[in-house]
Structure formats: C-alpha cells, structure tokens
Image 1 (cartoon, one colour):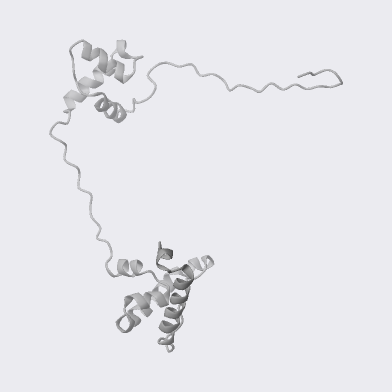
Image 2: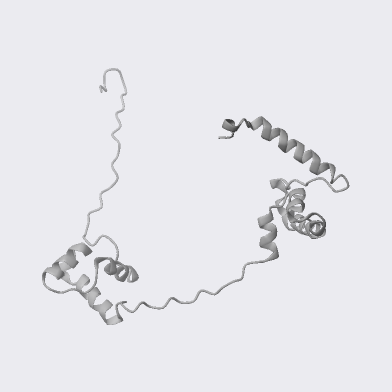
Length: 180
C-alpha cells in the first residue's frame, strides 16, 4: 500500500536506523540496553528482575517509561503489571436461577431415567416417550447435568467387549510354504 505513494521498505529501514542512531547518540552516558538472560539463567530470574526493576525506577523519571523499558529490555506491559498488581478476588457462589429444578424435581427425573423400562434407552428417547405419554419434567439438555452429578452419564446399554484383533502372521520355514 505504501508503494503506491513511493515509499518502500528500504526507506523505512533507513529511517529506523537514523532514528536509533540519533536516539542512542543522546544517551551516550547511559548504559547500553541489556538483553534478557539466556534460558540457562533461570535460577537467577528473581535477582535479575530485582536489578532491572531498580534500574527502571531510577531511569523512569529522567527518560520516561518507554525509553527506560527499551534500554533495559523490559516490556512496558510487564512494568505496568508490576506497578499495579492484580487484586485477588474471591469467587462468589453463583445464585441459582429462578427456573432451576428443585431437589424433588431432580429426584423425580432420576427416577424416570433409572426405571427398568428405560434402562437401555438414550436420554432423548426417554424424554420423547415421556412427552408422548403427556409427562414433561425438563428438557433433554437439563437431564444430562442431573445424570452427570450422579456419575450416570455413560452408555446405558450392556455392551460386549471384544478382545483386540491379532494381526495374522505367516511364517515360512522353507521354500514355497507361504504364498500371498
């Protein structure tokens, strides 16, 4: 898009170099930017952070937070996050919605789902049969959390388990014994 206006990436590279050269020329008395320690210095992370934080505190009033963070290799977001730590909040228990099922209604739904004639049916089939009979307890999607709370969400039918299939192996002990 910049090419339409006669600006190319080489112009931007040149401008950045000139800007950095001018910015660094004014900072000749200051220490050079420090790179983050390599991964092998993981045991010294707290000590390095303490040194960087103290240097940021000293440089910030003179240079501003943007330039100080740039020189020390620290992200501004990290600096702001350390200046204002997050407030720990306790999770308030969520209020039950007014249309939630009562304990008695939940037991009634469990009784319907556990009854012997519905033992090998899916929840949707039980719900449809009860609806056909003129009985509505709750939606299908409400039945699943009720079953999950009691650990009953699984395949409701008895299913046979089959042993793992063994790949046939043909072994020849002489010529012309195995053909494939």
